[in-house]
Amino acid sequence: MSFSVSGPIIQDQSYAMFGGINEDQIVGGVGGLKKMQTLAYRPEWTESVKQWTLEGQSLMYGEEPFDKIEDQKKFAAIIDTGTSNIGVPSKMFEFLKDRWYKSIDDLDCMADDNFCQTKKSCDEAAKKLKPISVQMSGQVFEMPPNLYLHQTDGRCQLAIHNNEMRGSSSNLMVVGDLLLRHLYQVYDFDNETISLGVNKHSEN
Image (cartoon, rainbow, N blue to C red; front, side, top):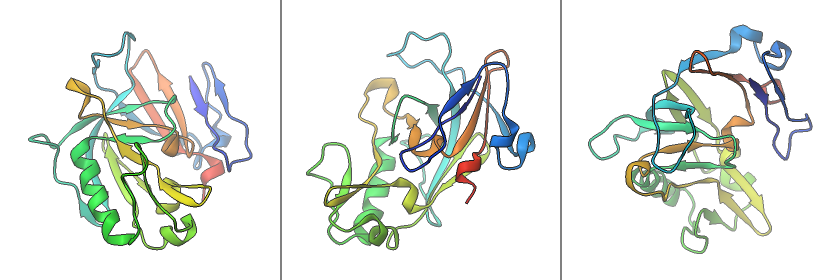
């Protein structure tokens, strides 16, 4: 099964294909897809037969790397097409929040239960923030600030939030529409792989 997902500022229609790939929708065609093996990860809160989980290997804010989660360098990164944003483990979120506070003088991470925000416009905030890069299964996905900022009435929200799940799920990264709407996604059930490539509507 393959997906092309559109966001609120993308005019293309979202769609799914069963048993096929639309290579015209992928930058570089089929050759632009990066195939990655999934992990045999089953969180305690799900009853699904298979989880579409990749191996999270690192995160960087600009050129500065996040070291590790507790004593582990790697983490499970669940690809979740039903989630709008990106949830990260609490120590990773504290790392990002500390850097955001240094960049945005009126950053508020208390008023909203989920997101840090500023009264600056997202265009203004984007000039002060740095890209966030996530490495999953050997591939690096870079998100410039305008990708993880969301403009609402009178404020700009940073749409990467703390994963507040507990137990074995507390160290997960949950990758949602914030990144997925820019990627053409191919899910191979039999071979347990995910292939991701830049979607044509996000070529720039």
